[in-house]
Length: 69
Image 1 (tube, helix red, strand yellow):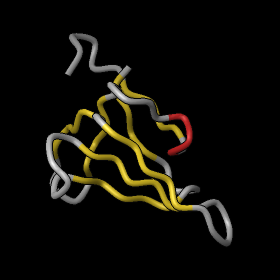
Image 2 (image 1 turned 30 degrees about the vertical axis):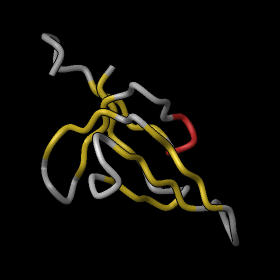
Image 3 (image 1 turned 135 degrees about the vertical axis):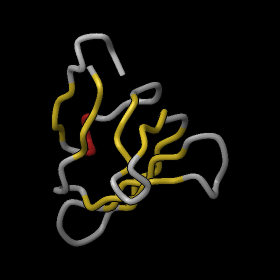
Image 4 (image 1 turned 60 degrees about the vertical axis):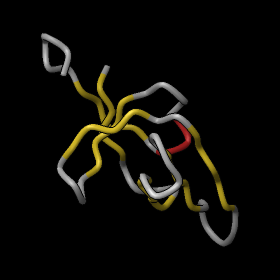
C-alpha cells in the first residue's frame, strides 16, 4: 500500500490496466493486467485479471471498486 494509505472508490469503467484494486473475496490487493467487459442489460459485467485466467475479480458495472491511488 502507498505510504499514505490513500485509496479511492471508483466504478469499474474507471479501472485501467496497471491499477491496483482490492479483491474483497480474498482480502488482498490485486494488480490489473487485463480487463474484459461483457455488455448486456444494465451496466455490464467487468472482469479484471492478474497473472493468470484463474486469478480474476468480476464485478457488476455499477458495483464500486476500491483502488489504490
